[in-house]
Length: 420
Picture (spheres, helix red, strand yellow):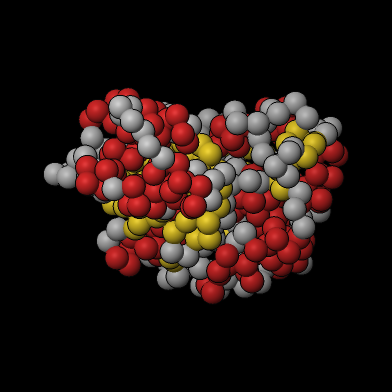
């Protein structure tokens, strides 16, 4: 015999305990509204804490126009959110929590102690003091058949929660072990919400077959065993739809990842979707001109091996030499003109992005065309969305967190106005 699900009404239900959901809870509780926050995990802010392991890059100090431009095709949708809560507002908010920040040499903004836990601890204390109720281990299952209540799977069985208004902040599908698993996609699709497919963003890629490993995708065993985990630097990367940029990336067992690759990931992912593969070029010697490289390659090497010659004349690292041998044929390596050209524009073909569960963030989600300016679902009045579950993406550098927090504030403000 099936038991009848328990019922526990809530005034305002926020589903998702990441930055967007917590920021929405803060604004709504400050307005004197009764807020209950539900999350499937035993605690909130898990991905936020993971980001803190790298120093917690809160935001970026660059001018607003450049900042907004980082959101690419979705700039027009994201810019109003950022104007409501920009980088300066975020730093002021952190200071109000007792967390001071500083601007690093790259322009990125960090807490002075480079930790996420103190900020999250102060934040949760503020929310509890404001009366926010937290319900952990409550996995959202959608709505009851009549649409009158939210359904949750809990340790005590299924729970139905009627709510005056709901704010969804369920994240994307990256790092599912931390709670963002994309399980909300079929729930919203079944209610007629227009969704863009979820895709990996700020992700690594697998390489296609190489000259040294032509029978299957991926690096040769020798190259992978020698260099996986090592950074390639300095290097400049260019690709269709991505202007040349200097930085560094990391060799993985099957391909490449790291900051420079993440910056180009949207363009590379889109090229793979269109053409089945993507090709980028690497300038292994960005500090040298083409003429300088050609002159050094052509310099007489006597009895020295080609590797010794390149190491001596151009200070090439073993990793960069390994890349040349992996990606060029023997004939190309022995032709000074072709070798010099490759050192300045080495083609590397990518077969596929890494799985979405490994990505730093997610592209796709609830299309802005399905939302009001206040981020309410047009198909479901009284249901608002915020954070990474919206259809936008941005590079790393504080942009992701800032936009998530900003969207949480805008959706919460709109929800409060809708109720009143």
